Image (cartoon, rainbow, N blue to C red):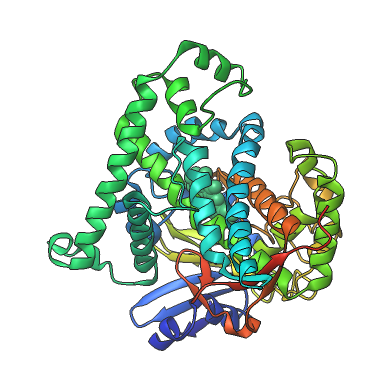
Length: 498
Ligand code: HEM
């Protein structure tokens, strides 16, 4: 296997996924990255990715990632051992039923409208001073919006973070910050004996977790105490129409009875809170960043929005007509995948299949091999995409044959009939914004729909431009790709709003 020798400075001078991309072009689609005694196998090939994530998925666990997340998420789906994962996945996945998602359209819309109202009020304030524009860090706004949505959609709790601060919100951000810090640190310092008591940051982290856990425990208690047979019947029939609380927690408590283990429920909720918050905020951030640099695509998006929303308030049916917006969301995920790397560790010896370039025989790997599946490299691979670094939402409409690439079946939008958004199936693992195989994201449709609605309602009302140049928007990365100092934009009311 080709070896890329990394200098430690590569880890800190710029986001790691940039260096992984340069080495991919230099060394091919499977290479070993060695940092002193530590080594990772870096995979940038759809056939090998498909093998690890789907065909041989149960020969791999989450490795380093589970070490990082276990203290926060406990036995939640992401870090859980296989036995727990199997049980909980079976219980949680049905909660994301199509009718639940339809019920969520209202939550996504109402929360987005709160953000829009806030911007309108800020604009009115500026108007009094004769200014027609307002400057805002949209990344921060999207973060608040996504937090409010995940709170209401998953456990029927209104953080109200778009308009206020609270100890729980502060604790959530504190815990996220620590999770982020841990994921960029390669020494598990938090495991040192007494660290949780002696290191001030660790003490704060324990305090933040306690605040969040108490909040979640209260919600779980409440959900159990208010369990009503009429709601259970409605949920059994997937009738969300008159349910006061359509949240996932309600589903998990009602469908499983009051005997479901509180600790496990709390781990599940915490996992979804963390997995579904920054990721969605990041998609919206990069979608706006890309659109602001492509005014003609922004105009095309707004024309579609005016045409569709001219028919009335957003509904599940109308989302189906927002075809261009949906492609913008997935194209943003292609260019800025969240997270940019998927992490695995082999549980037993395995042989990776041959990749498409030069290494047809594949490689044997021993048990305990740490692997990065670089989604960033796959999504920007010059071997699978035309103009890979360009923002071209329309690209997903085009069928591509396999260009003679053995083992890869090409890119065919018709392969996933009925899917509202392009996915890993149509691209045979060249595009995997939500992973693939049994550990694929459970919240993918929730997140896509939420992003589509938030982007639609924002662009319907405002013209958005970057405050400075795109180059000033520096990238940093932990679990997600985000900006160093915010996505500062200038917003004004659209003059041609319908
Ligand atoms: C797993 C991405 C939103 C819950 C994953 C994975 C990816 C991903 C790539 C697979 C990780 C791996 O294989 O190692 C995203 C992105 C999102 C998003 C890009 C937003 C745009 C959400 C939301 C929720 C959620 C909204 C919940 C409400 C989960 C859970 C898992 C997961 C529970 C673990 C699944 C399992 O192991 O069975 N996500 N996610 N995600 N995601 Fe998401």
